Image (cartoon, helix red, strand yellow):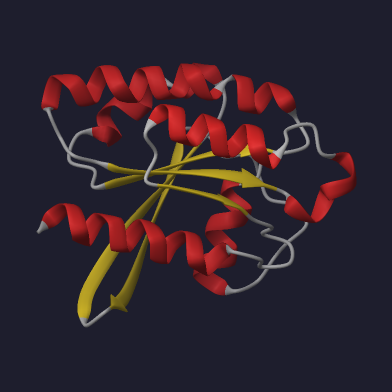
Length: 160
């Protein structure tokens, strides 16, 4: 759907047309500085297949930020967000964490094939209490750095 493309675009600045399917999850670290704060951001890239959804529970524990993502050209990925958010909420209610969340509509470069309107994404984001909403393109790089800066700033704000 584009999570791996987004992650690699952010980490390397490069877009590749294809990646191997994520099996379970992949893990990356990015060191950065935001407003004088030095951070070591751990990025966990989850497979979107339902059979791997159980892994989300273990990753939510101790998390400070989560990016939920859908493909603007595939309505089903938008519809399935509720299932992923439900797993997140169930786990988060048990641990009572304050986790920053961002909603991303991916593949903005495929505007002509759009199946989910930007307005639907904004409305959904507000209704679920996300900290921010972005539409992005890993291919062009549009909004990629802003997404990660936004989640980092939200995490810093929550930790204070």
